[in-house]
Image 1 (cartoon, helix red, strand yellow):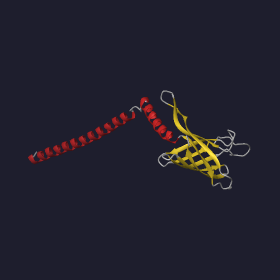
Image 2: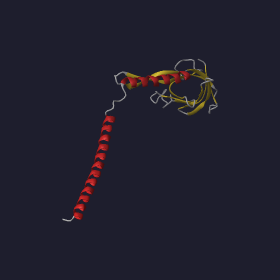
Image 3: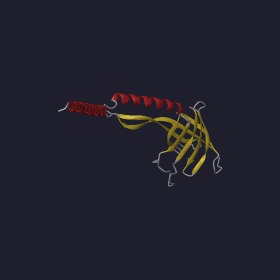
Image 4: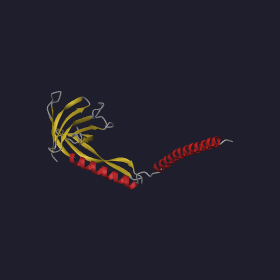
Length: 201
């Protein structure tokens, strides 16, 4: 067997060895990466959720923020409804805005969660008897824009035989610094009038 032939065989073996080594390293790297991804995914999926104490802390922070906003708005506002479409005489109204507590499910310990919410009691001051012309309203105050919206609950009973006669909707803006509310009112018949309500208490 010639020397050249032997040298060619040796070179071929070296090439095969180098190729095998390169392929093996590539496979090892790929399998290592895959193994690392599996381990990380398992670690993430097994990570514990927020603890009960963390959720309670967040609940307390949300509650504190809402109360700060709502206390700025709560109070008694009074004024006169004008510009009525039927040209009837203006009449006085009063709206007492207050903070109520809404049930908001249970926490991890099975304790009741409550969330501050705004409500209002609307009444016509020209009616001498309590209860006549009064409505309880669900209220939303948008502190960022100063807008407010309020309406009776969809489950509010009708007065007498007139369908939806207890319905009342109020929209407008609140100037928190001046403590003045400018609103439009609508009832079951449509547009009722406008009013400027001043905080009196």
